[in-house]
Image (cartoon, rainbow, N blue to C red; front, top):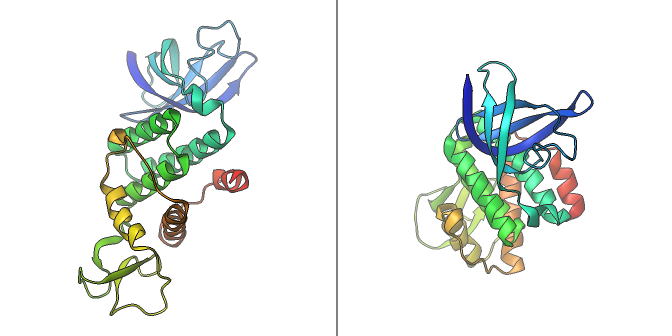
Length: 240
């Protein structure tokens, strides 16, 4: 059966001398495809099957096996990302993260979140902030969303003074014990960034201190509750 799909190459593996196997993340699923001769520079598949290429693929589809590539054309090669080692490191990290979350919850919205992130990073938006926004949004699909609209202890919406990864959400003045205080701007931004449509972001002007607090919270929260281990995090930390 022949099938037309649209997706992003998230992994590629050598196969025999001149071919390779690619994993393409699509709206429906992640599909393994054999691209014959794709390692040859003169091959029409050489560029369209490169990692992080967003392309149209016409394939000979196998439901429970390896599909075969018939033809393809590039939608977006994310050239700005591929020129920058920092951007590549962040995209590698979010690709591994998104793939693992997608296996937990096969929801097509995760695919669109991923594309939106790549688009924004390629456009020049801060990859560190985009990654933090994505991580906040993915918590829903993991079933571990923090409480960000009221105090996690007593439920009040008044006098919120910090957010705690240990307690799992916002903390008010009366329930505060030994939790570290974060900026009020950070508290407001947590909810705003969780709700924002990444695809519609036109400006991201967040100072370094708040970025640090947002990142610290999301990283600690994932370590405590997600059970996800990412090999690419080691590379990213080295680059940062």
